[in-house]
Image (cartoon, rainbow, N blue to C red; front, side, top):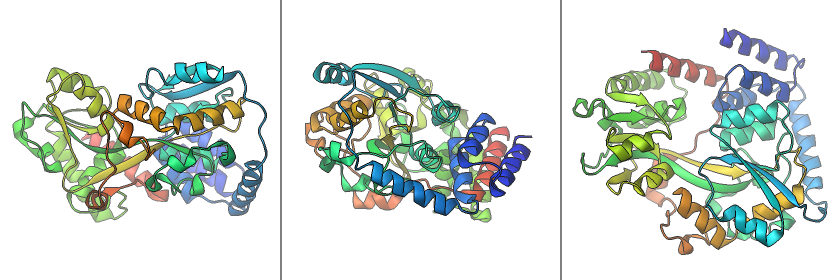
Amino acid sequence: MRDRRLAALLRAIGDESLDRREFARRAVALGAAATTVAGLLAACRPVGDDVASAERATRDAAAALEPLGPIEPHLSIYNWSDYVAPDTIPNFEREFGVRVTYDVYESNEELLAKLLAGARGYDLVFPSSYALSVLVATGLAAPVHRAYLTNWGNVAPLFLNPAVDPGNAHSVPWQWGITGLAYRADKVAPPESWSVLQDVRYAGKMTQLDDGRDVIGSWLRFRGHSLNSRDVGELTAAKADAISAKRNLKAYLSAPVKGQLISGDVWIAQLWNGDATQARAEQPAIEYVLPREGSTIWADNVVIPRSAPHVRAAHEFMNYILRPEVGAAISDFTGYGTPNQQALARMEHPVPYPTAEQLRRLEYQIDLGRDTAEWDQLWTEIKSA
């Protein structure tokens, strides 16, 4: 039923009876993942859409040169949970005389559902790349006034000019990380390959993320393929490998697996490096490795919604988190990497940027376009097998 409704939405946007924002809103309401919405938006370009996007980009570029007013006394932030240092907000409030309202969400879908449904009042949000691409494509991301970001030069080149937001016209890099394997070093030897998840010796003691792109991507990399593959044969093999591994898995589980790693109920978990670092703070036996076949690298971003009421305060916060000492404190707390190259030397537990060798094994997830539906179906079949 959902697929038929999505197909109807695609036809509507194709014949221009539905704009991109309304398409995204309805797709999210149907339960489509952020990756799905981004892929469909990328694949479905109505007549005149390129012209409209170019016109909006021109308007945004002009608006980004306009001066902003004085800093407002309020700022409303909507961020992931456990994704800022304890003193980041209090220190900002004291220095700038701004009272901050801070709310949290647990998924890109939750964030997009609110914004696409017309929620107003948020000044800063923190989308991952796919959610950022939706916000840019639907015109919900406001342009960044670079003149107010005097600390912009601290951003490492690796995180500049992302494909989903050319020139960082609407975003400031926030945190970055990779997907790999967290493991209990007191229970198992360091796992070198994704193949460990197919090892029956650890059945019931392993998990993979509850994320189709990461799961399927890991098995594509296992066979030496791109984690963004659209090849039917490669995807079929990845499905078979994923189902083989599923027989050994305790569950598909994302952030909540930290507690199970700490307790010892799980010994090996596909996980994001920052979550593994957070878990290690409570259980030193937890270690982390990038499998030899490679995996995903990702970055989250700070974005001002177009409806933000406190734009100058939002820019001050963006510039504030680009200070080396502030960026270092945030990443030391979250366990993720900082895109602020000047912050690394100040971190207690620095996360070094990937080496050239590691970068050859790491890929950013990209829009799958119309093949997104095939990936969604594949993930459904894997979970129901």
